[in-house]
Length: 441
Image 1 (cartoon, rainbow, N blue to C red):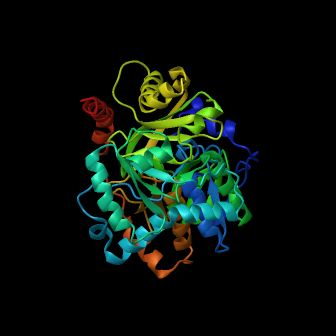
Image 2 (tube, rainbow, N blue to C red; image 1 turned 30 degrees about the horizontal axis):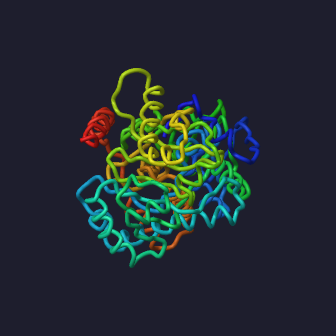
Image 3 (cartoon, helix red, strand yellow; image 1 turned 90 degrees about the vertical axis):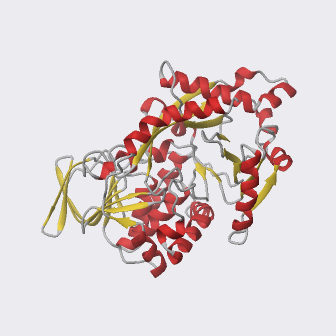
């Protein structure tokens, strides 16, 4: 998610911990591994590689957590998104690798929470679960089949009928759902800052305001130009997701960018939390426009999604659409307890670009024998990005189990153009408008 600076500091403003900035690179340096990008993915790769004892450096163009990692919704989602192609996971990765990958996905929430607690990362962690809410009776029936398959593989899920979902959420907008108990939420900016401390404690050298201007591969090494200084590395990893830019031109064409907006209400009365998501779970529904809601630590409701086509400024349009959605979803509560609908007006809006791969899976593009680019978010950057990043760091240092090494190789390939990416990006707002209209009838 590319950072729109207008409200970048929302998560910064409400986090509880102070952050000490890292130095700007002001001298030439050599390293075994250089990682470009200081978000969740880059920091997780750095931690995985740093555990080997090799010399690892991380270069961030701005500040730690400046991109998608620091401005997303902070949802912890221990579940894979539906794959965009007709090929199954088994067909894409093979039997053994698909089983390893699903174990990784299913355990990603628990592992994330465990690492946060072990390293005492202060990120306003909420471990009360994530709900996938069915927007129609048909989807609710499909979820029952999905649950029957999943329940034999994981113990952290619970099927909810419409009444049970209403008891947990206080809302009767959906037809049922599945509760993933290992899900939850956090402050994503604070989480990134916590990861940076973990990496630094392992000996990783982190430099902020140190954007890479040029990359040259020569004589078995890679030379990076940073602030007019030289970084000499044996291997480099681009962990920049949607912000790859032109360092490797083809790399920025291997994925699709979709613009996503987030918005939060004004601060709401404490009393409202008794009736709306009283268990403090976070929720995403299954509708094509994917309505997502959660409480923030400072008593606001956050929501977001793809913004439909419309007139006027996108910021104003997002405030209008998100406010209207919340008022629709929460209208029974608002009426029953005589709250003012204006409480749900959206106060802050920000936006960015999510990187989606063609397969819908994490992807590692082998740019050369010494350089690679890793794309992992696909809307699951917090939990899955943390897990896959750390594993890839271990892979780079040959400090990884055979099954995980095989998994990494199964999602690795040379960079190739995603030809439909621009068309899909342009069509997304129209698609969102069409689905919004369709849901009214």
